[in-house]
Length: 496
Ligand code: AMP
Image (spheres, rainbow, N blue to C red):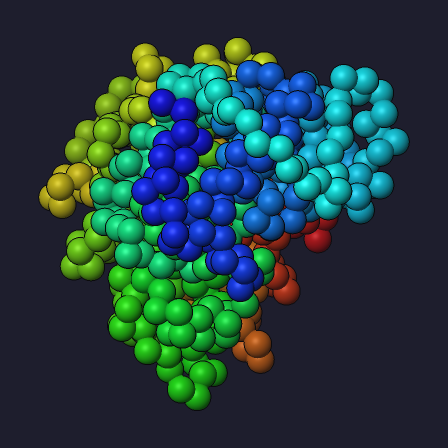
């Protein structure tokens, strides 16, 4: 099956119903489907063929979705790019992917024009000058294991890799999430995430279209507007990253009148670790227990807490989604003993087809058909093998031969009332190989010494886990999805 065809079939069923309300403008399923078809015919006439890569770098706009599904409709491959990427990054993605078409805006094009001149086979299409009018037949010429998207990983370490994601991967994930989160055509999702990333596109927007539900889409996330809209529009679902939930918590305290959330079903968090504090505060304030889930570009969603609130736990990302298997292995690739920490391996229809043009990297990423996520975690054998993540394998700190998982220390630090956020990393050390250090951003007007913070940790953690040094920073470097960029942080701290 071709994903765009599947969505077109849903559109036929719900024709009159609003599919997307983008900044107040309503697009019914019929309107949406018609635009996708017009776009698809126009792309076909530009000579875009099955398997061609089409890079889309647009700000968050409805046209992004029209292009995305139109590209899939003609069997081409959609390659969404962060609208903030700079010239050098764009040149890399266009060159690496061998894209045939680059869809962007004129202001963005001005900045990269001279740098992409040498890409002689690349056509450029300016979104603001594109008004397709011609109808025609759509062939939906790809499907199944054929590639629908290339999603470049956010590249927190090394060069970004293009993850090849098939129609089957996307459909399997949409189905699994539909079931796990009990999506229905009565749902109203408030969409405040970027569209170029898996979370905003394949989880939120696709989840909504797959269900025949309605998405109210905002260009930008503004906490006060979110609280107001959830009430006014009788929304049932919100998806966000922990940074979004932190800002919603902060805003809640300032609201004179708390919103009526009686229509809400569930608030979902993912893409980065949710802290204990965020989990408990959100529930104390709003009465809703956040539902945390775990996924990645290469696999889509892997695990989720259950839709029943009593089966959601702080720090845990829940249980494998339907059709997904999880194993935890040690450094030798052997299954760990019960409840021990190891690398999380994933198998299932959601797992991508490999990295574009990187056969070696693809090979390294799989063992016997299992994908190596690079995440460290454990499964609680006494709780139906509930999964907990403790950090990235590359972020594991080995100090004096002991393993330290940054997240454990970050949770302890963040339980201190003076601390807004923290990141724990390992820096080279002559005696210990690596030493544990923490970068800390304090809350406004908070004041505390390094000694007191280390004391706070020592009373709760074994000595080898406690930070040996603390750096105070005004904020931590984060990428567009709110994930802390520890590689950038390490560089900064080394220079400090
Ligand atoms: P990305 O490919 O940009 O979506 O990043 C995927 C990575 O984000 C995963 O491999 C995890 O390290 C991290 N991640 C995603 N969801 C969670 C979560 N709920 N808790 C902790 N880390 C997460």
